[in-house]
Structure formats: structure tokens, C-alpha cells
Amino acid sequence: MVHGTLRVAFLHAPAAASLESAQTPGFGQALGAASVAAALIGAGLCAPSDLLALSADAYPEDQPFLARIEAFNPDIVGFSLYSWNSARLVKIAHALRERGYAGFIIAGGPDAEGLALIDDKKGIFDAIFLGEAEREFIGWIESVRNATGRKDPCGEAIRCSAPDLAKIPSPWLTGLFDLKPGASIAWELTRGCPYRCAYCYEGRGSDRLRPMPAPRLEKELEVFLEKEVAEVFVLDPTFNVQNNRALEILAFLRKKAGSRVHWNFEVRAELLNPAQVKAFAALPCFLQIGLQSSDAQVLAGIGRTLDRGKFVENCRLLDSQGVVFGLDLIYGLPGDSLGGFLKSLDFALSLAPNHLDIFGLSVLPGTELWEKREELGLDAENEPPYALRSHYSSPGRQGFSESDMAEAREIAQATDYFYSKGRAVPWFKAVVEASGMKASAWLKGFSCFEGYERQANPRHGDIEEAQIGWARTVFGQPGPKARFASLATDMIRYFGAWSRALAEGEKTILSLAYHPETIELAASAGLARLIRNPNFQRQPCKAEIGPSRKGPILRLLK
Image (cartoon, rainbow, N blue to C red; front, side, top):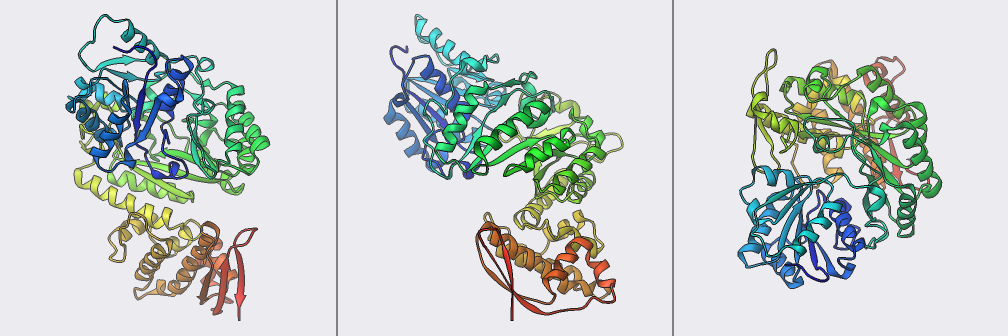
């Protein structure tokens, strides 16, 4: 039984270290868990000192992790489950029970759905909360307190209704995050999503958009600025779905934060308009756009649409205004094939995104795809992250075999290395066009290149050498394309040095076969067009590219 003030431990694990690195150990990225913790404090059930938040990533070994939990002596241990952390955290919950922990064990988070539906270990949990749990968790505690005896854990699933956001306390204003200067954080402006994408967890929740109260957002932003937060990832699934609200928020951020914070938004390309783009351009920000596929028929099968003309038009508009954006693709979608994925890759790269995030399909429990997996012929893992192994062919489509999935994965990894981590966007299109290859063929070839050394955290200089090695391989074959080799090499080195001066503050001295003006012209006009010019010629020189207060600076050396 639970009486008096509670002691509660919340366990989580981040998707990536980037949002954690500037913060002390605590809730980290686990904003959902922190919101539930703030609700406990608001209900008077505990004080901040009665809460413990631990990231599993801080404990590579299970024994120290378990010992730390037990030393806190919590009444309740809550697990914040996502597809990337469920396997380890459920294992920890099971180990707690085996070691004799007699308190309550609960679970929440997106992958709580998978635990409730298919995990045979769910019986060690006293309750599994599905959805926004701030209100139901408080109610569950009251029911446990009023019960006449302790029930055996049974993995009871509690479907939560959407709370009134004006009545739930803010974890940022409750002091649950110990922010340090330079921190990167996640911020929630709105809950709900009007779209019903078949593969997505968001499609299970409310389709009613519920904004956080403006006074709360104003106070939270004041905290971020006071603590010198450097970067904010806005969690709204589609930030620009309501045009007027998006413009109001962007104006508010511009007025209050100026250039002190870098912002990251997820937007829908077709909903962009000149006013939005102008407002985004006034902020230091990055936009992520979910393309997923360029095939309208494939998209229709997962509850999405694509206005191809509008998509291209608005991406061009972003580019013209200097707004940095990236695109998402998914391989393995129902009705798609390896060939279809490669066409989507070509389409995405034709828009020159700053980077391209490519994911293999996960058939997440509780989503529409999971419910229709047999009908659609989806063969996926039953354990997190529920990765698709293959799917059967459909009329007029080849489907994705296991070998197709493996090949798509290799191409996706090569694209991330060569294009995104390689910062190739300034020169990629011009160089690939000169080769006569499609972008997908270029990257597929690179994925098999012996000079491509797969590394978890490669240095940009190492990537650049691999890029040059592949370009020389392509252009080094006897024939008319051979004349592009040295210019392509100069372009890769020149723009690579420029990116390092901007990102790392690094100075590079280059020995170039062509003058920098020629290199920049080649990137915009194309190598083939430039070389056909009768006045085109080599002009060997040395150049220094380095950082300055106003950005990278070029200096020609004698």
C-alpha cells in the first residue's frame, strides 16, 4: 500500500546523446515522464526531493543501475518506454522483481502500447499507462491508496484521456530540469495531430490540436533564456498545420529570443507559404520535412498525400530565403519496392536538402500498420524496434524481400555518410550530373566502394577523403568524363573546408587546380557547361579558408 508522501523513480533512456550532453543527469529528454512528475508535485503527492530520474545510458551495466534504484527506496518505479529503449528497460523491471522489490512498477511512453499488446513480461507491471498520463496516474495512485489490499501485478492497461493542458503543471516551471548553459532541450507547444499516418504513434492519439496556454509558454521561454539554452527541438508533429498560430509563435520567438536560441521544427512542406517562410528566415532555425516517399500511391496506402508540385515549389522557396531544411524517407513501406525507394531518393536529393534522414519501416504495436500487418503481408520483428524484415509483393509491385531491405539499409547508411555527414549539398548535384549517373546510382555505387570505411562518428576530413576517392573512381575511367576529375576534387575540398570553418572553426590551406570563383561557378552552373566554355582553363592557386566573426573567410595565398 502507498501512504503519505511518495518516493518515485523515473527511468528512461535517450534516443541520442545530443540532447543530453549539456545537461546534468536527470529527466534529460524524457519530457513525458517529467510532465507526470510535475503532476505529482502539483497534486501534493511528493516534493522534488522525493523524485529520482535516471537515464539507463548512464549505467552501461545492469547491476549498478539496479543498485542505484534500490538505494533510493522508491514506492513507485516508472519506466518511460520507447522503441529504442524498451528491451533494456523491461529487462531492468524484471530484474527488480527478481531481486525482491515489493513496490509498484508502472510503465508509460509510446512503446507502452507494445508492452501491453505483445510482451509476456507485462505481468510484472502494476499498471501500463497508454497516452497522456498526467491525470490518470494521479487517479490510479488514489485508487491504490484506497484499496483494501495489494493486488498482484497483472499488467493492467489504462487508456488515458487527453487532459486539460491549462490544468497540468509545467515540468520546466516546477524546477525538474537542471539546465546548464548551452543545453539542447525538447519543448512542447501543442498536443494532438490532425493526420492519421498508418505507421505513426501520433495517429493513435487525439486529432484535436490542443495548444499549451500562452502564459505558460512565455514563462518557459523566460527560463530557457535565463539558463542560456542554446537549442530547442519543438515537439509539435506538424508545427505549421495552423497558419495563424505558427506565425504568432514565430513572431513571439523572434521578439523574445532573437538570435540567442537555435530552433528546430517539423513542418509539412505543402502547408508552407511566403509569410511562413519569411518568418522562419528571421529566426536561426532548421526545418525537418517528412516526405517518406515520392510515390503518391504508396503514400495513399499509409494515410498520407503528396502535392508534388507544391512540395517542390515550397522547398525551392525555403532555399531561396536561406532557410535550412532536411527531408525524411522511409524504405519498406507497403506497396513500395527497392526500385520505388531509389526513385524517392532521387526526388529527395533533387531538392538539395541540407541532410536526408532515411529510416527502415518499423511496424509499431497499436498503429494501423500493426493491426493490418497480416493483410498487408508485413513480416516484422515482435521485439523493439519492430523492424520490418520483408513484405510480400502486391499487384503491380515487387515488394521488399529481406535482401532488398538489406540493400536499402546499406544505401541509406551510405547516403547519411556521404551526403549528410559529408556536408555535400553545395556541390553534390553538379558533380553527380557531370557523371551522367542518377543520385541513387552514385550513392549505391559508393556503398560498395572499398574506400568507404563505416564508422560510428567519422571525422569530416575522413569523409572528404572517401568522397574524393569515389569521385576519382567515377571520373577516372577513360573517356570524356575524365576531364571532370580535378574540378570535382577541388569542389569537394573547397566546400568541405568552408563547412569546417563554419561548424568547427577550423582553418584549412588548399592547393587548388582552379580559382575559387571557378569552383563556385561550377557548383551553380554545372561542371559540363563550364568546361564547354572556350575560355575555361585551369588556374592553380593556394587558398586559406578559416573562421571569422562574420562566418568563413577566404584568403588567396601567393
